[in-house]
Length: 469
Image (cartoon, rainbow, N blue to C red; front, side, top):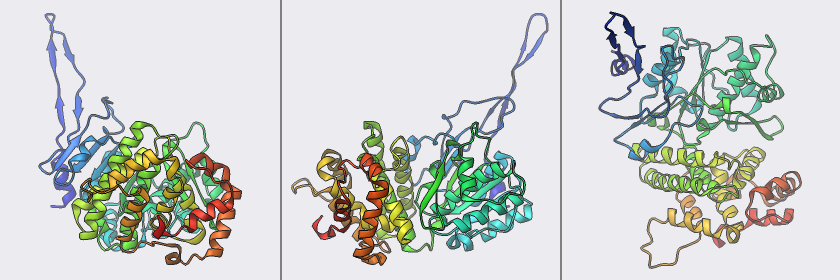
């Protein structure tokens, strides 16, 4: 029997009908109560986040499924607002089919990055045989969500009138899926119009926002784009742009560690390093609360543990789930009033300008940015250093947070450690510093604990030797 059918038989639906007989023989029927239960011997389920129960539920209760063999910490994680479910450490194919049934969709537009294509082709064939596939698999979205590939996907999905978007891959594909949904909701009212960046961005400003088609995200790495309502893209002019709206939050996330097998090191370790970036960005953010910092520190510990485990065995299921759960904690902390962080802003523009993967942007810049504002964020950086300190017995002075980050980066295969690794020279950095200060100086200084007084300040931060941190 297929796995999706076997999984479905494990789902218990209990209908309770209570009949009350009064002394006058009047029969009162209580409406059935439907209880969703996704428990089986291998899973731990938390269903306390949504109390909506009606006799005609259009959406199932929000649900969290985490393989209990891998990480007990997940039980305490709430399903993010606006989402129906998050499933970690489960097979993506059978879980996706189950979710499609729950969402009552039948015309699914599938997007994947090229590295995921060999692992998902069989599932796409299954969808086609079932009559669920809206169009051939799209693998045109490139790193950063380049404009051409994104617009092609928007037009294809609109042409076939897709009622659901399934995204398999990294952050660029997950973000592109959000923007495709945004365009699908707009294209329904402008029949035949081709997608443009301006048209997509205009769609985010509608009030009221019409319902968007659901999105099922199957990430193959740890960028965490699937857990936010923000979507980035890169224009033809290599400028980072995007859209954001609460309705753009994906509907379901399914993290299956099998999807990460065979990924290049720069993807696997680079995206996991972004979890460290998200955590320290939230901890040092001027608007962060004590609760945000606590959640970010918890996430930082898990990501650090997971990264060290993946360095020893990059296919370790437990290490990958630790990276994912820690990244989840970190990105939710960052997105609770602290997005973007100073590092996010700088690294997004560095990535778009020099065509560098954001994981490598963190490898090159994260420790430098921390060191720049260390004196103004010292108390918070001490907590970061303690979270990253796994080998100090307490007899030695605690190194700076920037030192811990740069030492961690040095162990990660495939991740750039300095500008030269990304073919960025000093003249390019000087031009970048002048652009950032002149175009974004005011925003930089709102986000940075220590302001930049000039483009030279910014350039000094960019070019500080790693060995001196």
